[in-house]
Length: 234
Image (tube, rainbow, N blue to C red; front, side):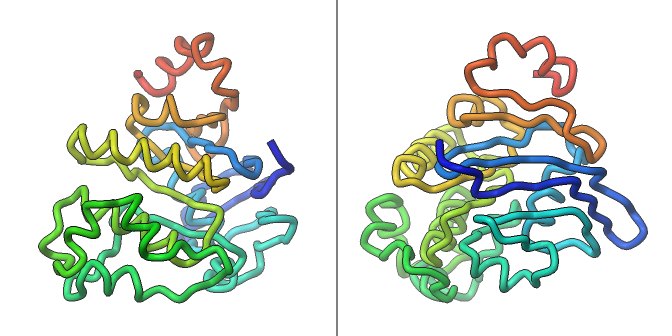
């Protein structure tokens, strides 16, 4: 693995007066898939949002490719090559699939062309003229992921992309994550679906009450199952 593309040190975050993250440390090397595990409310989504500056206040350090982004606004952080796929997906219902794909600006030289996106997501090509409201939940999730690939982002922050989807779609998303890793993308996933996340990740962090309580490599996974059961109930 290469040097860290994302390094989070002593990160604290607040929503209003609510102190949500308490000194979070996370390191993600270029080309890795790293998964944040934890129960609902542990602070995993807030960690992703804090990387992009989408919280009320944050302190500490968020280094993206060697640049400290803690004082930058979200649109400037995106221009560092960061793409965020939120749990709510954010599909524009009045636009077609292709219009949704073409809407975001190209923020870097690595924007994935439409033909490559359609090769990766053949369902989207079939539904390219369909409005967002006519897409299935799985197709909307594929579109949300494909849209950030269009921007040129190389660091992908994915929040619960398997949530509520049929097993066949979850399997298709797993193949997509594997293909993106092979293309050199760096991916941070928040996942409740441990069976989906486990085969994909190079490393795991477990969060509880706004803190990192454990971090380990995929090679250590079998030896950590009792601890995972304690924290996650898996």
